[in-house]
Image (cartoon, rainbow, N blue to C red):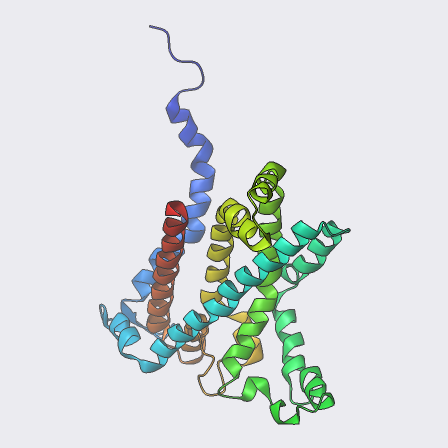
Amino acid sequence: MSSPPGEPRKIGYLYILPALVVYGLFLLYPLGRAVHLSLFEWDGISLGKFVGLSNYADVVADAGLRAAFGHALVLIVFYSVLPVVIGLALASVLQRARVRGLAFFRTVVFLPQVVAMVVVAVAWRQIYSPDGPLNDVLRAVGLDGLARGWLGDYAFALPAVGVIGTWFETGLVTVLLLAGMARIPRERYEAARLDGAGSVAEFFAVVLPAVRGEIAVAVTLTVIAALRTFDLVYVTTSGGPGTSTSVPSYEVYHRAFELGQVGSAAAIGVCLTVLIFVITLGVNRIADRA
C-alpha cells in the first residue's frame, strides 16, 4: 500500500514546535507563574505565605477593586463602542464619496497608532491642563464656566481619559472598516439602488453585513485595549483624583511595586485575564452567529 503524498503528519508538529516553545515561554509560563503567585501573600522579597484563594476573595470584596474593574468597563464605551460608531460613519462617507487622496487620509487617521501611548498621554495632559488649549478655546468662545482642570475633576477625569482612547482607537477602526468596505462588489450597491434603497437603507442592507468580520476584529482589539490600559492612566492621572480613574492594570502596578502586595496584584492580573478572555470569546461568538 503506497503512502499518501506529502510528508508524514508528525512532521507538521516539528514545524510548529518553535512557535509553541516561544508561546509557552512567554505566555503560558508567565500566566501559570501569576496564578501560582496569586495563591500567596508575598511582598516580593521575604518568604511568601500560602493563603489559597484569599487574594481572589479580596478582589471581590474590595470596593476599590470593584470600582477599578467598573472603570475599565466604562472605558470600553470610549475605546470600543464610540470608535466603532465613528469609524463606521467615517468609512462609509469616505467610501461613498470616493475622496481623492484616500491613501493619505488613511495614513493620517491611522497615525495615532504609531505614536507611543506615553507620548499621546503627555500631549493630552497638556491639552487638558487648566491653562491648556482646550480651556483656552472654551474661554475664547465665552464658555468660561466649562473650563476646568479636566484630569483633576472627580466627575470628568474618567471621561477625559476615555476621550483620549476614542481619539487613539478611531483611526485603527476606520482603516479596518475601509479595508472591508473596499471588498464589497459594486454590484451589491447597484442592486440595492435598483430596489429603491437610499443611503441609510443601503448602509444597513449592504455595508453593515459585509463588514461584520471587520467589526468583530475591531471590537476585539479595542475591548482588549480598554481593559488592559495602563500607561495612559499612569501618565495622565495616576489613578486619581482619588481613585476615580483607577483601572485593574494600574492596580496591579500599584499593589505590586508600591504596596508590596505581589500576591494580590497577581490575583488582579489573573482576574483581568479571565475577564478579557470571556469578553473577547463572547464578541467572537456573537459575530459568528450574526
